[in-house]
Amino acid sequence: MCTTRSVRPTDLVALVSLDGRVYPNEARTWERLGCAPEGPSLLDSALPPWFSFATGRHTWISIQGQTIRGLVSARRRGNRTAWEVECLIAAAEDEHVVLDLFDRLTAGVGRAGALKIFLRIEAGSELLAPARRAGFVPYANEALLRLNGNVPVAGMPKGITAHPWEEADAFALYQLYNATVPEHVRRMEAATFPQWQAATEKRTSGRAKRDLVLRRNDEVVARIRSCRDGRMGRIDLAIHPALRQEAPAFVSLAIGAVGSLRPVLCLMPDYAGWLSSPLQDAGFGVDGEYVVLVKRTAMPLGALEPRPVQMPIPHPLAIG
Image (cartoon, rainbow, N blue to C red):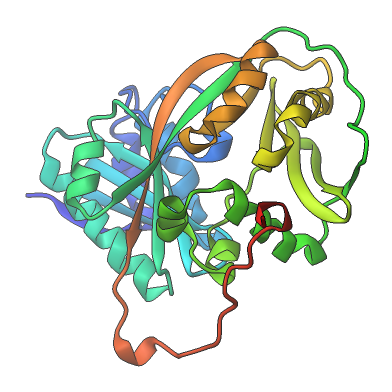
C-alpha cells in the first residue's frame, strides 16, 4: 500500500535504495527546457527538491515500504498566490499514485496561499492525462526553438530606444501582455495586473542576464530577455504585433546578447505564431513541443478579502 506525504530527512534511505534506476522529471520549468529530461537516477532528480524545504519549496512523495513510487515538488512564481510544479516523477505505472501526489500538492500549496498552480509538460507525456484528471486545464501550446548557427548583427530600428528593466516598467509591460496575449489565455493565466505579477515566470538565469524594455514614442513595444545558461544561451521575446517589420532586428539583438554561445533556445507560444517566421528566417528549428496547464485551488471564503484591482488598459498601439 502506498502512502503519500511530505518529504522527511529520513527518506534519504528510500531515495538511495533506487539508485541506478532512471526516472525522468516530467515537469519542464523554463530553465530546464533543452536539458535532458533524465538524470542518472531518481536520487539525482529528487535530491534538489528534497533539500528545498529550506528554500520555500514544497515536496511530497509516494512511498511503499522503503520504495519511492513518485515525487512532486512546487515553488513560487512571482509571489505566494502562484506556484509552479518544478519536479514530477512517476516511478510507478499506477495512475492513482500520480493523482494522489497532485491532491497533496494542491492542498499543501493552497494552505500556503496559492490560488493557481502551473505545470509545463511535454506534449506527448503519459502524465498529461492524469494531470487533466487531477484538475489541471491546458490553456497554451508552446514550441521550443533551437538555433545552432550564426545570425547577422542588426542595429536598433529607427525610433526605438532600449533601457534595462525597472520596477517602474511593470504596468507598461502588463499593457504589452494584454496586447500580445489573446483573451482566452489571459483569462486562465492572468486576468488582472496583480495576477500577472504573481504568474510571471522567471525568464533569465545564469550568467550575463539581460532584460531590456524597448519603447517607441515613450510606449513600451517589446521586451527582450537573454542569458547564458551553462553551455547554451536562452532568449525570450515579447513584441507588439504592430512591430512585425522590426521583429527580425529584435531577434538579432536578442541573439547578439548571448555572444557566440550555441545553441540558443527560445520558447514560443502558439498564439504568437507570427514570430515564428523571423525566428525561422534566423535559422531556428523546432526542438520540442509542450503543453502549459493551470489548476485553480480552492480557498475558504473566510480567507478571502475583497480588494480593489486595476482593470486592463488597452495598449496605446491597439487603440484605433
